[in-house]
Image (cartoon, rainbow, N blue to C red; front, side, top):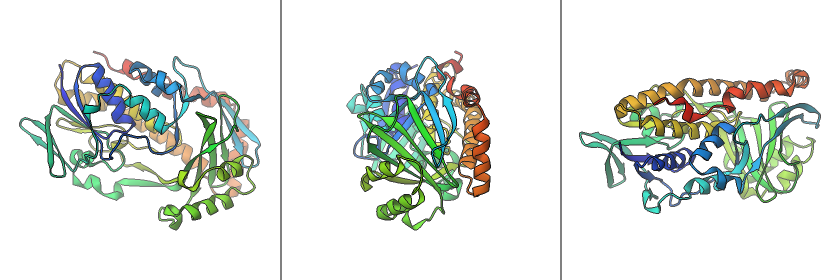
Length: 389
């Protein structure tokens, strides 16, 4: 049955859901608080569980025009000694690295311009006898048969679903480290190769994206109120000091990255949301389950959410029951991957020099293929196969 659906947030999850719902002939309106739909940020990884969905909704072909495949992860110590070589398992779809802007462009392609309402920050959600209404400042929209909160870590819709206390910052859990991301020009990698380098309390990784560029990321155990968080000059000086003496090409990557292209964020996840839905309002992606970025699965899980939600809405049952089915299908997987990501973060951010050396020695004797096989449950997931009609 055709539904009138509003999606709050034109990020990766929201755009994926919009494309999936349009394929099923629903009427969709997408609300975005910024004046244009654009992928801000740096590069990201999309594993086969996500590219499988992108292929199903017709976006993967466009992604591949600007993406690069990921075939094997090299894990090194800070002096360049190889600790592990982890092959990427082959599935029906690829593992790729792509710039967020290019992914947004691929997901936006084909969406009718009139369905996207930009510069519309949703300030409140209201249920009525006729459906769900959205308040954007002095404007009111709706009613809708369903409202989907895809509005990220600081979701307004989550505060409606879980009560006003869901706005409180204490629901966010700081993981104890900051993450820097940047883009640099240069051919530093062999085709299909990507690297992560481990030190004591720090990591540095980089992966290929389009046009002869690489996306890099770095971590450091610091307080969440570190004074350099908003100071580009202080950040560059700090990164230069921390990674001085580390294996090449780290210093060159930092040198080739303009200050304006360096992004610094706190690593957060969120206490498990008590509710994923309320009435005819539901949450997806970071709005309900942000996870620490250690497995590259944050965006992938949001993409999975979009596919599963689009399919359960076509089940022969009420919208409210469909949303309960959606949560049942997703909660266990999301929580499991979140726990795995937190564990990888704890191991990767070990700061004690003796413990970090022990970690590296253990890693050097574990076959990389073991990690390939242990990731199969994550990467082999096919979202559309989880919904039985």
